[in-house]
Length: 179
Image 1 (cartoon, rainbow, N blue to C red):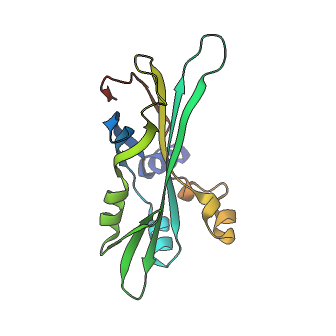
Image 2: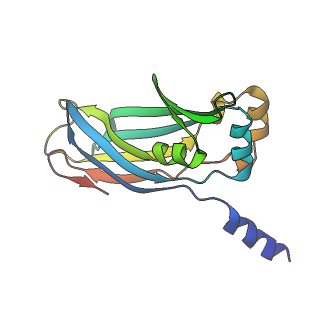
Protein backbone atom coordinates (compact mmCIF):
# COMPACT_ATOMS: atom_id res chain seq x y z
CA UNK A 1 0.00 0.00 0.00
CA UNK A 2 2.83 2.39 0.90
CA UNK A 3 4.57 1.67 -2.40
CA UNK A 4 1.39 2.48 -4.32
CA UNK A 5 1.01 5.76 -2.45
CA UNK A 6 4.63 6.65 -3.22
CA UNK A 7 4.14 5.90 -6.92
CA UNK A 8 0.97 7.97 -6.97
CA UNK A 9 2.68 10.90 -5.25
CA UNK A 10 5.54 10.81 -7.74
CA UNK A 11 3.16 10.74 -10.70
CA UNK A 12 1.10 13.66 -9.37
CA UNK A 13 4.15 15.86 -8.77
CA UNK A 14 4.36 18.55 -11.43
CA UNK A 15 7.40 18.30 -13.66
CA UNK A 16 9.36 21.29 -14.83
CA UNK A 17 11.55 20.82 -17.89
CA UNK A 18 13.36 22.87 -20.49
CA UNK A 19 11.87 21.76 -23.80
CA UNK A 20 14.30 23.51 -26.12
CA UNK A 21 17.10 26.03 -25.96
CA UNK A 22 19.43 27.67 -28.44
CA UNK A 23 21.99 30.46 -28.56
CA UNK A 24 22.09 32.45 -31.79
CA UNK A 25 23.80 35.65 -32.93
CA UNK A 26 21.71 38.72 -32.22
CA UNK A 27 21.99 42.48 -31.85
CA UNK A 28 25.19 43.24 -29.97
CA UNK A 29 26.07 39.65 -29.14
CA UNK A 30 24.56 36.23 -28.62
CA UNK A 31 20.96 35.75 -27.51
CA UNK A 32 19.19 32.85 -25.87
CA UNK A 33 15.84 31.47 -27.03
CA UNK A 34 14.26 28.82 -24.81
CA UNK A 35 10.94 27.11 -24.17
CA UNK A 36 10.33 25.99 -20.59
CA UNK A 37 7.47 23.89 -19.26
CA UNK A 38 6.42 24.43 -15.65
CA UNK A 39 3.30 23.50 -13.76
CA UNK A 40 2.40 25.26 -10.55
CA UNK A 41 0.87 22.99 -7.96
CA UNK A 42 -2.44 23.97 -6.28
CA UNK A 43 -0.65 25.30 -3.20
CA UNK A 44 1.43 27.79 -5.22
CA UNK A 45 -1.63 28.82 -7.23
CA UNK A 46 -3.48 29.49 -3.98
CA UNK A 47 -0.55 31.49 -2.57
CA UNK A 48 -0.23 33.72 -5.64
CA UNK A 49 -4.01 34.33 -5.90
CA UNK A 50 -3.99 35.49 -2.28
CA UNK A 51 -1.52 38.25 -3.16
CA UNK A 52 1.88 36.76 -2.32
CA UNK A 53 4.51 37.46 -4.96
CA UNK A 54 6.35 34.52 -6.48
CA UNK A 55 9.84 35.10 -7.85
CA UNK A 56 11.26 32.96 -10.65
CA UNK A 57 14.75 32.98 -12.14
CA UNK A 58 16.15 31.76 -15.44
CA UNK A 59 19.90 31.22 -15.09
CA UNK A 60 22.46 30.68 -17.84
CA UNK A 61 26.15 29.92 -17.43
CA UNK A 62 28.62 29.89 -20.34
CA UNK A 63 32.03 28.34 -19.75
CA UNK A 64 35.11 27.83 -21.91
CA UNK A 65 36.70 24.42 -21.28
CA UNK A 66 40.39 24.33 -20.36
CA UNK A 67 42.47 21.17 -20.35
CA UNK A 68 44.90 22.43 -17.72
CA UNK A 69 42.50 23.82 -15.13
CA UNK A 70 38.84 24.25 -14.28
CA UNK A 71 36.55 25.70 -16.95
CA UNK A 72 36.69 29.47 -17.36
CA UNK A 73 33.37 31.22 -16.69
CA UNK A 74 32.77 33.51 -19.66
CA UNK A 75 29.24 34.71 -18.91
CA UNK A 76 26.76 34.26 -16.08
CA UNK A 77 23.33 35.83 -16.43
CA UNK A 78 19.99 35.60 -14.67
CA UNK A 79 16.56 36.78 -15.76
CA UNK A 80 14.28 37.45 -12.79
CA UNK A 81 10.48 37.39 -12.88
CA UNK A 82 7.97 38.55 -10.29
CA UNK A 83 4.46 37.12 -10.54
CA UNK A 84 1.67 38.40 -8.34
CA UNK A 85 -2.07 38.93 -8.24
CA UNK A 86 -3.50 42.45 -8.04
CA UNK A 87 -6.82 42.17 -6.20
CA UNK A 88 -8.20 45.60 -7.18
CA UNK A 89 -7.84 45.03 -10.93
CA UNK A 90 -8.35 41.26 -10.59
CA UNK A 91 -5.38 40.57 -12.83
CA UNK A 92 -2.07 38.81 -12.62
CA UNK A 93 1.00 40.96 -13.10
CA UNK A 94 4.29 39.67 -14.47
CA UNK A 95 7.33 41.90 -13.98
CA UNK A 96 10.73 41.47 -15.62
CA UNK A 97 12.99 44.26 -14.42
CA UNK A 98 11.18 47.52 -15.13
CA UNK A 99 8.78 45.95 -17.61
CA UNK A 100 5.31 44.97 -16.39
CA UNK A 101 2.45 43.21 -18.10
CA UNK A 102 -1.04 42.42 -16.82
CA UNK A 103 -2.95 39.21 -17.58
CA UNK A 104 -6.53 38.21 -16.90
CA UNK A 105 -5.61 34.55 -16.36
CA UNK A 106 -2.71 32.94 -14.51
CA UNK A 107 -2.08 30.55 -17.43
CA UNK A 108 -1.43 33.51 -19.76
CA UNK A 109 1.20 34.93 -17.40
CA UNK A 110 2.85 31.52 -17.01
CA UNK A 111 2.98 30.98 -20.79
CA UNK A 112 4.71 34.35 -21.23
CA UNK A 113 7.24 33.53 -18.52
CA UNK A 114 8.00 30.11 -20.02
CA UNK A 115 8.96 31.52 -23.41
CA UNK A 116 12.35 33.27 -23.36
CA UNK A 117 13.19 35.13 -26.57
CA UNK A 118 16.15 37.31 -27.62
CA UNK A 119 17.72 37.46 -24.17
CA UNK A 120 21.26 38.83 -24.55
CA UNK A 121 23.53 36.43 -22.67
CA UNK A 122 26.98 37.36 -24.05
CA UNK A 123 28.42 40.32 -25.93
CA UNK A 124 30.09 39.66 -29.28
CA UNK A 125 33.68 40.04 -28.04
CA UNK A 126 33.24 37.78 -25.00
CA UNK A 127 32.91 34.47 -26.86
CA UNK A 128 35.83 33.31 -28.99
CA UNK A 129 34.78 32.35 -32.48
CA UNK A 130 35.65 28.78 -33.41
CA UNK A 131 36.14 27.70 -29.77
CA UNK A 132 33.49 25.46 -28.22
CA UNK A 133 31.74 26.68 -25.08
CA UNK A 134 29.65 24.76 -22.57
CA UNK A 135 26.25 26.26 -21.82
CA UNK A 136 24.16 25.44 -18.74
CA UNK A 137 20.56 26.60 -18.32
CA UNK A 138 17.92 26.19 -15.62
CA UNK A 139 14.66 27.73 -14.40
CA UNK A 140 13.57 27.82 -10.75
CA UNK A 141 11.34 29.36 -8.12
CA UNK A 142 13.51 31.63 -5.98
CA UNK A 143 12.33 30.91 -2.44
CA UNK A 144 14.92 33.28 -0.94
CA UNK A 145 12.81 36.25 -2.06
CA UNK A 146 9.59 35.02 -0.47
CA UNK A 147 8.35 36.61 2.77
CA UNK A 148 10.08 35.05 5.79
CA UNK A 149 7.11 32.91 6.99
CA UNK A 150 6.90 31.32 3.54
CA UNK A 151 10.66 30.74 3.45
CA UNK A 152 10.35 28.69 6.64
CA UNK A 153 7.43 26.75 5.16
CA UNK A 154 9.37 26.12 1.95
CA UNK A 155 12.21 24.35 3.76
CA UNK A 156 11.81 20.66 3.15
CA UNK A 157 8.48 20.99 1.33
CA UNK A 158 8.10 19.65 -2.20
CA UNK A 159 5.24 22.10 -2.82
CA UNK A 160 7.77 24.92 -3.09
CA UNK A 161 10.26 22.99 -5.20
CA UNK A 162 9.65 24.27 -8.73
CA UNK A 163 12.81 23.97 -10.77
CA UNK A 164 14.26 22.31 -13.82
CA UNK A 165 17.41 20.30 -13.92
CA UNK A 166 20.47 22.02 -15.37
CA UNK A 167 20.39 21.48 -19.14
CA UNK A 168 23.85 21.43 -20.68
CA UNK A 169 25.03 21.56 -24.28
CA UNK A 170 28.07 22.58 -26.29
CA UNK A 171 27.92 25.79 -28.31
CA UNK A 172 30.29 26.87 -31.06
CA UNK A 173 30.10 30.63 -31.73
CA UNK A 174 29.52 31.24 -35.41
CA UNK A 175 27.46 28.04 -35.80
CA UNK A 176 23.82 27.39 -34.77
CA UNK A 177 23.64 26.36 -31.11
CA UNK A 178 20.54 24.21 -31.07
CA UNK A 179 19.93 21.81 -28.24
